[in-house]
Length: 149
Ligand SMILES: [Zn+2]
Image (cartoon, rainbow, N blue to C red):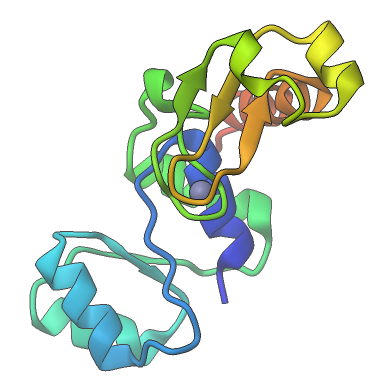
């Protein structure tokens, strides 16, 4: 239900487990407990069950993504150094790559104009500092400037 939020938390560098459709509530609670995670949810019943077994919870009150991000940033401080260090698809920390290593792996124009590249060792998705990256940094900055007190 909170897939966009999960993706953004990964962009920020939060270690974010997002359960796929095969996991039921019991399994989600098990993972949260076993891996000492904070449960971020809008599901009242799930939150109630988590609290009962002392899993830290973050009760999301809104369907608005920006407000959701504000809520998380307020509760769980952002580490400046982890921004854009995780794969947004699978949560794995990225490895940086030498420029030579990515020739033929990314579009020619990207290769010619960009100098910093990363790869996800788990799903082989390539990342680079480009327009998309700059847009994300801008969104992060805007979010942080407009944090409600
Ligand atoms: Zn990945």
